[in-house]
Image (tube, rainbow, N blue to C red; front, side):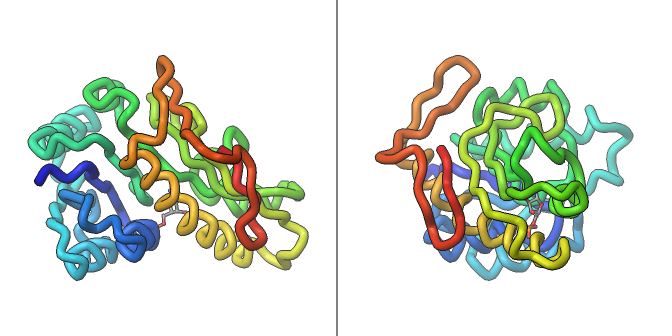
Length: 212
Ligand code: GRF
């Protein structure tokens, strides 16, 4: 059976775990890590998912790495390449090989607070709302078309560590939800935009406001 998803990771793999506990391990053909020490590799292995390490230190530059990565992914013929804490920028050549198929999750309400330590950036900026964004990946960092966002009020949190935890909780709820809609073909591609088919565009889950 062709499995629809390849997941790319670099670290802890808590988002990968959220996919596994939400019955998506069966849809993942392979988990690829650029970091040989990534804890997520063990999560994948214990869920019975094939793992591959492609260490970026073994490659001369980004293009060479991206080329090797796309060559590994292509035979799996995935419908979706899911970035789950993959801490590398993917170049245009890679992205153009998988148009509108690469999805990322970022721990802020994009376009605010791109890059690393996004919840810290949000907390320190004193914003009243923060959250997580699922988006299509394009050549610019944390910049592609926004598919879904989960929003929480920040004023309940005393420090950015609390905001980091709350943001991860949103991610772990939202990513499996969105990916299931993709696998069930509950979306429309309009040019370079992806719109989920949903009953309601806006709804609550616990303290999270979800917007599609
Ligand atoms: C998450 O906050 C995700 O939004 C960001 O990197 C972090 C990865 O966490 N892209 P994990 O490896 O899934 O635990």
